[in-house]
Picture 1 (cartoon, rainbow, N blue to C red):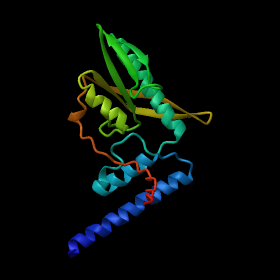
Picture 2 (picture 1 turned 180 degrees about the vertical axis):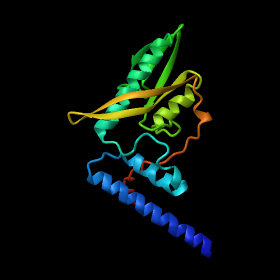
Picture 3 (picture 1 turned 120 degrees about the vertical axis):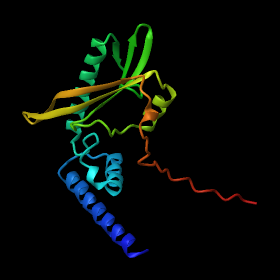
Picture 4 (picture 1 turned 90 degrees about the vertical axis):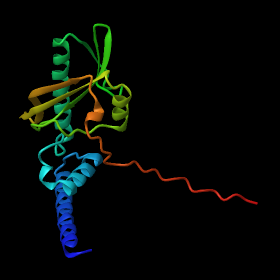
Length: 195
């Protein structure tokens, strides 16, 4: 490793340790940071440290704040769908998408994402969500609600505002889809066969 590579490695190591410190502090303060979010922050910090605060879905929100943001995004998405001639059924509790929307005899599956950020250019999705949008390409929609504001009302987070961005006939492959975590399962120990 030459001197320049070693300096870059040290810089990345310092950035990574700094980000871990923020994650541990957030957890200590009771912030609910999902493992996938922590991994995404680490990867983003190492790849593009200047962008870490510019995009994403609000990694530092508490569970209650995240629920409020998601709820607000769902409300605004339903309003948009219905005002654009769709009948919208919330299926978020039972399906790997949020709304089943019907218009002129055509059904689309709608994914809704909400954020307190100004940009909706970086989203987290489950493997099932990604698979669905690839298999159903052209028959899905993405609704991203940005600029959601959180206010404290008697100790409870309330979400308000929001700007709705919609892509009907969404092509997920027009986005960069990058795996940020892997699920590891311990294998059962191999049993020795008796001869």
